[in-house]
Length: 298
Image (cartoon, rainbow, N blue to C red; front, side, top):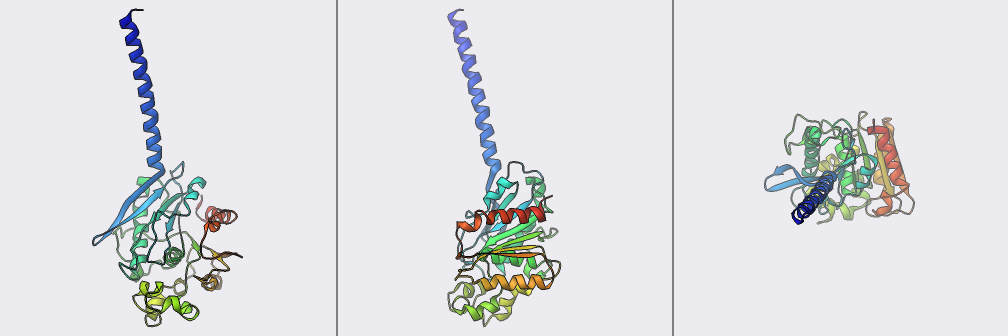
């Protein structure tokens, strides 16, 4: 073999290896992009860009969709804090949505945003591959409040809003998972006045004033007000020692469901406080999977 032939052979070999590495890197990059898609704008309200993140399972096609709504007292929090991303390993697509905080707009702006996100997600189901007819909504604390309220207010025009358009799409969900969210503000006025009527308290800021002086709005913002027989199945998880959102809030919503014969379950962590990763680990993660498998898995 001549020196020129040897050089050509090595050059071809190096190019082949380079091309192979390029293919591998490109494949891995595409997989990473497919697994998580961040900061997708679903609506604009004035100067505010409302965005969501999509977390995909290994097989996205025809997967059920779980929509996560973050907590933070309606005044803080971020869609990046998505505590149910682990559901992708169970075959679910997970969407984590942002919404306007109470420092920007008072209720029902937050619910309008969440419903706008649901409509956008339905309108874009074919693009991303999940099933638009099998959607559950979940959230923790303030996010749990919005999840339960979203699930129980189908067809309520005042609470639907028009954020993001897609008004030909439905914001109906097929299941709700509520992690320790408030559900009954009139009751909370009596049990936790420091969180509902004191200036700068979380509910005061949400409603734009003391809840006892905004009683009609407080009722409108309470999922217990809206429960009807056609509402979706509900799973509630709450800590017995929660002093931020008392367990009576979850018991109120459970009682409304039971009175109408709608499927509902309340699971209580005996030593649970307000939040913590134990809510999203076994055995409670298994309860959530079983519930979702039953109601939105084919």
